Length: 129
Ligand code: THU
Figure 1 (tube, protein in one colour):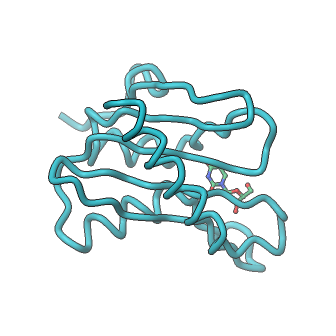
Figure 2 (cartoon, protein in one colour):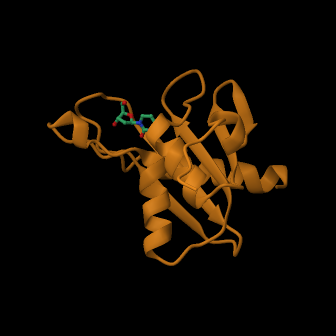
């Protein structure tokens, strides 16, 4: 990914974050997922008073993409309001491992942008076969 492409994806994640519904945690997250065909899908966290039902931004982007027919994923940008990086939760890591095993994950914060792979974030991942 070119630096300009990464910056664009981070901008898209920041825009998606504005749509977050997070009145219970006051912690908003945005994600933007780029396919191999150049299409970008967005996600934000959506909370519920039954807190276990809250949905993460990363999975929202992934589900959006899968529903619309996205198949191969090149890069994912994740942003939050935190000063430090916002790492995807365990559930999102497992979902990304299934549907986007080769995705480049870019975490952006005021500290800059850091790149990770799924195998770095989820080593020894659960597989049935
Ligand atoms: N959250 C995400 O959207 N992505 C993450 O990677 C971690 C956490 C959301 C879930 C919940 O709405 C809020 O952040 C606080 O945990």
